[in-house]
Image (cartoon, rainbow, N blue to C red; front, side):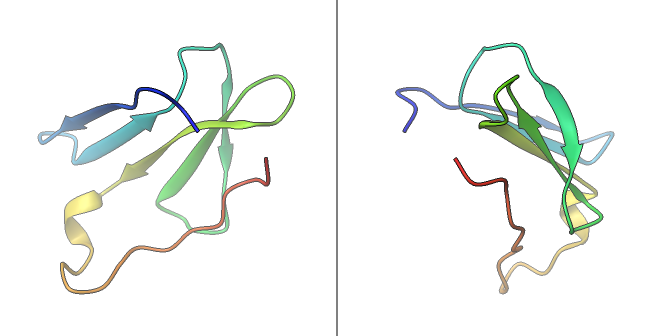
Amino acid sequence: MADKVKIWFDAEADYLEVRFSDDAGYEKETKHDAVMESVDKEGHVIGFSILGVSRFKKDKPLEADLAPA
């Protein structure tokens, strides 16, 4: 588990990004159309992002499967 988590929210773009690491990586699609995962060169998840985050219901969690560690 990461010691620090960095979270960015851009209200104008309605975009949320969470990073567990500053390591270089790339974005990868998930089965959920609003969620992208960030992975390092070994395929470990180092973060994720959500586009259109405000459209999701406040009383129900957003669920998405990320790549196994």
